[in-house]
Image (cartoon, rainbow, N blue to C red; front, side, top):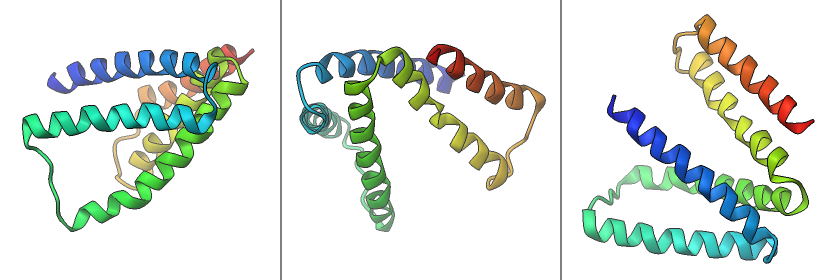
Length: 133
């Protein structure tokens, strides 16, 4: 049950992050929006690391490099889409990213494919379509 608590915190955090991001894109260009949000995230992360002393450094740290690069491209594209389009369409559409790791879990990690999970993917796609109309 512990992971649900953190999932709810993430859901609320990302919800407010998306609202704040939309408001910032009204005043900043894409790069500036990304820079300021990332800078403040880094400041808070460094403070958290200093408090918790939980930073791990080993050979796997290099694997974060391509993930970080992909994240940067996605973030810049997200802020540009948010600047140009309505948040009520952009945010649900970009949140369809969850389908990729779910499919990865099914195909590569051999996680259980259940009717409920397949229905969840279908409903997520339908919800995105309905929210974009």
